[in-house]
Length: 127
Image 1 (tube, helix red, strand yellow):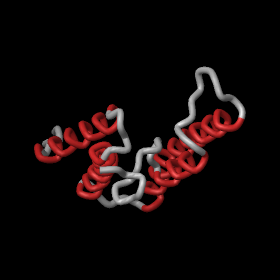
Image 2 (image 1 turned 180 degrees about the horizontal axis):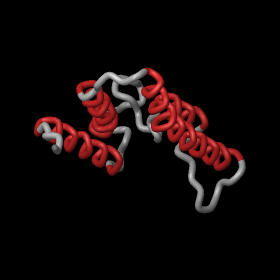
Image 3 (image 1 turned 90 degrees about the vertical axis):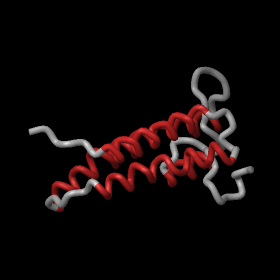
Image 4 (image 1 turned 45 degrees about the horizontal axis):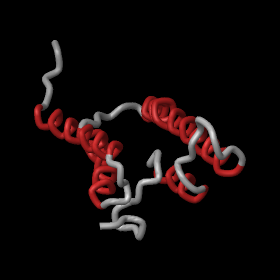
């Protein structure tokens, strides 16, 4: 028997996906709108994950966490940081580009942002 879908969850997920698309396509990430879209899109999915959570054995949860989330995140973040640092300090022209200064790259890695968009409530965010 197929599981019944919950309509309001599908609607919220659709809005979350639109926020991600809008946030990544805005030219001015420094704007309040850009910061809004990039700040609320991921928490929407975290909230839905908590709502849809069902208990599992701790070993299975830890395995899923490490191999489905942490390994891909750290691999991708490492590549982005490495490429940005190389471009910032060695290679200034060509196909490779940096996502920002060394400080911005490290901040993006620590906050899991994937880019140098400002966070709402920080001095970098302009209205």
